[in-house]
Amino acid sequence: MILPELLREIENRGVQLVPAGDRLRFRPKRNLTPELVAELREHKAAILQTLKMREGVDPARIEDAGEVLEMARAYFGLLPEDREEPPLPEPEKGHDPLVHRHTAKARFFRGVRGRDLEKRKREGLPPWIRLVNAQGGGGGR
Image (cartoon, rainbow, N blue to C red; front, top):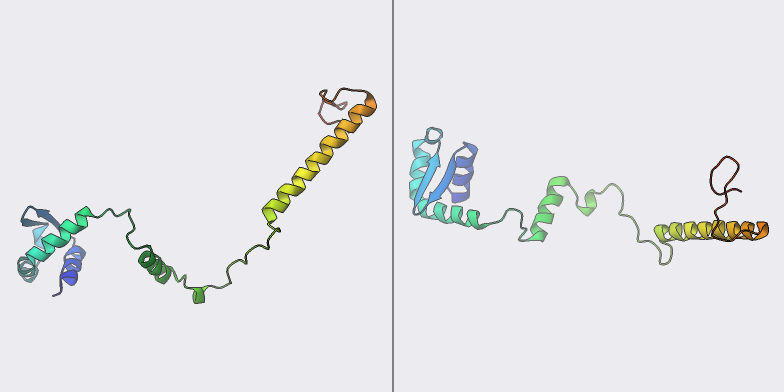
């Protein structure tokens, strides 16, 4: 049996392998067959080396982002040919909807402020006094 297959078979049986110095410990023993124990003894050095390499690896760190992306695409079916609709087109230069919306709002509020200042001038009020309508709300129009 090849080492990755052996480790996969042991892990599928719920057996935990733990390196302890130059010894290999495993639990629960009742889940292993005598053939698997013989395989463990035969490949002990390689298994210890593999387990020690696993301990040093941080699972949160991505070594090869390309490989991870390829696996995710294969798992979730995110290959370009699997997409149902094409990706969004690039916005035209100078026509970004967020910038346009912000500009429109800025123009609106600038206009409102200008109208309020004109109304205050007409009524002979200083610009720092806030206009109040008859119901007690602000912005009397």
